[in-house]
Length: 131
Image 1 (cartoon, rainbow, N blue to C red):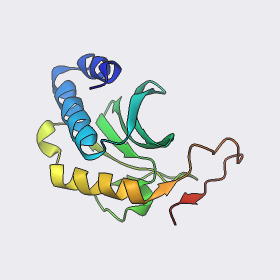
Image 2 (image 1 turned 45 degrees about the vertical axis):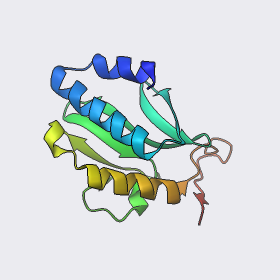
Image 3 (image 1 turned 90 degrees about the vertical axis):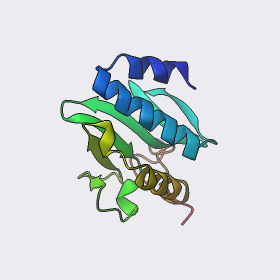
Image 4 (image 1 turned 30 degrees about the horizontal axis):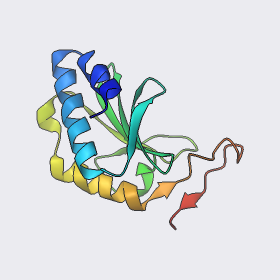
């Protein structure tokens, strides 16, 4: 368990903390090879330095975001507009979290990745990893 991520979770309201703790446990269980840390003020998991999945507190709830989720072909994940390939879902109650969906999305996040790690070097151009 990452103590910085746990501190982030503990700093949330009781309901949001419960959501965060479930997400942390499920992500860690399904993505054991990933490095996790607080990045840009919220919990993020990385594979080989590339951001894969993370969550953050918004007014609307806890947003779970997959950096390459736009290519997952998952209707529950809402694709953001713009040049990035992220997609997210927002939770307001722990009961909304479907562990099977989460496990499937995490599995896709291992196979479908855009190279965010080198986006600055490439001046904002994203390239697909593992095509």
